[in-house]
Amino acid sequence: MNLSYWEYKTLFAHVDYTIVGSGIVGLNTALTLANRFPKAKILILEKGALPQGASTKNAGFACFGSISELLADLTSHTEKEVYELVQMRFDGIRLLRKKLGDSCIDYKQWGGHELFLEREQERFDQCRQNMSSINELLQPIFNADAFQSTPNTFHFRGIKQDYITNTFEAQIDTGKMMATLVKKVQEKGVQILNGITVTDFEDIGTTINIKTAKFEFSSMKLLLATNGFSRELLEEDVQPVRAQVLVTRTIENLHIKGTFHFDEGYYYFRNIDNRILFGGGRNLDFITEATAEFGRTSLVQEELRRLLKEVILPDTPFEIDRNWSGIMGVGGKKRPIIKQLSNNVYCGVRLGGMGIAIGSAVGNELAHLLD
Image (cartoon, rainbow, N blue to C red; front, side, top):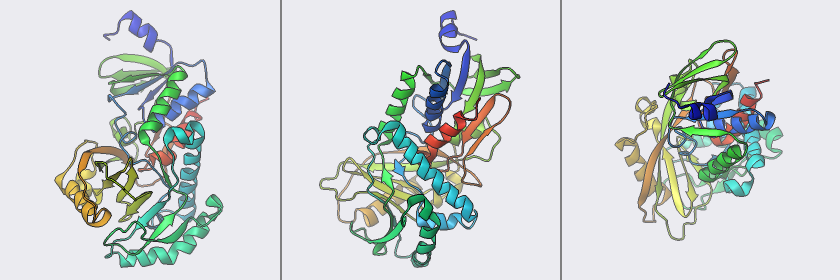
């Protein structure tokens, strides 16, 4: 253990709660714990220089699920389960807004729109035919019809001339959200240490021995909020999947506003700072994209550029500014795993690509598992 007396005394002595992962869930867990136990010593360990999963690498969609996604969910989940998923997302976004404030996350309720490519006649018809029943199912959540048909006002090409729109959906600035969360937890005295990889842990009854790549220490409780990287420490139904994203340079007089999905949500785009942010395409190669490794592939990147040129911005010149990837955690069920694993170990993982919507709620519920 290569820790000086000062390092150990200041950072690692008498730690009450250690949280692994400084993403949306980890920070919300810390904030809730700090409010519940103001005298507790809380430590967050993050293996990257920045949060390594999807929290700072996502598209910033405050969404509840497109209509085609919900219909697909109904083939593997009960109506009650789908309803509860949407309710959790709705409550989670409301909690996020309450905790941080709309201005601090740049919340804009410009609606979420599902587009249907010309070849998707069967899916388009199915969604239109089931719109009333889905609206009826979700009526108690929104107190209004969630989905409605709207015309192709943004002049996308190669699609059906109506979108199916959820007017309650919105977009946020992920960077502002994370900066605000970090500031709030630090104001509560929570210590965040970056570049620390937890490799193993042992619950010895009264405390947890935590082993990192650089040193070991003890904590009273351990909370795992590693989502897409959960398999490194847990044996739970969480599989990592990679999402590739790009953003254009500034486009003069960009008229597109809102969040957009197509192909069952496997592609998604939005406006941000007079640019288009566009991601997805893992359905092109599920096997390769089922990974915890960051990176980009020519197959996905070329398809994103083609769709950007032919569908989203067919009459607008653009240049790509940057591209990146994030790692999500998915599984056989879409409900997150929030539970106690042993006497002193807990987890909040498997956000299913809905981190913005449910991250605050997952962190809150995880923190409330502790006495």
